[in-house]
Length: 444
Image (cartoon, helix red, strand yellow):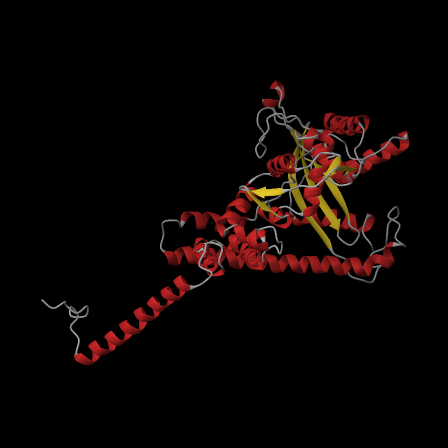
């Protein structure tokens, strides 16, 4: 029975059959010739160059599929493997780096990179202990001489290697190796300790200076802070002490610095003052300034929340209305800032001649000045946030606040109006307050 042709299972015509047989013959014949040449090569032993090339091609497959973070490490290993260490410690005066494979380099370096700095130091110290010649005399034949330098013989898996290969395998530099050798000669096989450990920096303040800062913050909190019962909304701590919103850390630091200078004591800087406040007195906080809510913003936000289950067209309309309102508000705010800035630039020379202790005639100043005025929320007195028993069942006396601010100076005057003389927030009362401000506190 004739052997079946390897292409007989494929339904092709005679021309295609001839082409396939030609390709098969050329390809497999070339591969057989290559195998014969490799077997007859004089460098066919395990240390041959062709063997190294084959091993390099096989081991290069382990780098396939590496992430971008490993590309630089792969390039380092391949470059060192190709360039070698240029020593002659291996058999046949070959470089010692040729006795190791790419697996050896990658495994050793990856293991060392995974170790912490302290763990890697212990690994190197162990290698130094096993290889360092600690003898102070060198024996050569029948003579002995004193050693000026100690030699280290490096090994890796029983194979002697040079210093360059040892440093590359363990991912360290020459300076670190020298430091570890000096440390071993002086302290033996012990862990290295940094010289600044348990040592305070030269800029550290004394305990007395820190106590003065804490005492100043606590005294300020005792005098001005509000102690509210229970948990205060907006704050996580229960024992929080709230300073008035008019108080700032910058202003308190300036007051603290003036007190220290008057008493001849050392003061801390502003950043250190804030750090000590945050670390030691985190329960002393400054209240956030309250403000009136925009009615249009509130309505638009409520409308957006209610359109969660509505069609997309209504959602888009609600969002578009809010965006349009915010765009107009941003334009108005920018116009207001420009007006304030122009008034400040025009009033600088005139402020040097203004005396606010005397009245000024109307229209005595030729220029543009920007004023802002509005009513604030009413206050109640006597004010007591804890609301003791008798006060809880009574209605406190009301006090209205009307403020006028000249942004060019800037300077603000507040009018406190008792409920006995309060006539409402109409145009007549507003014009009276503004007229009084122009006459007594205006710029003319």
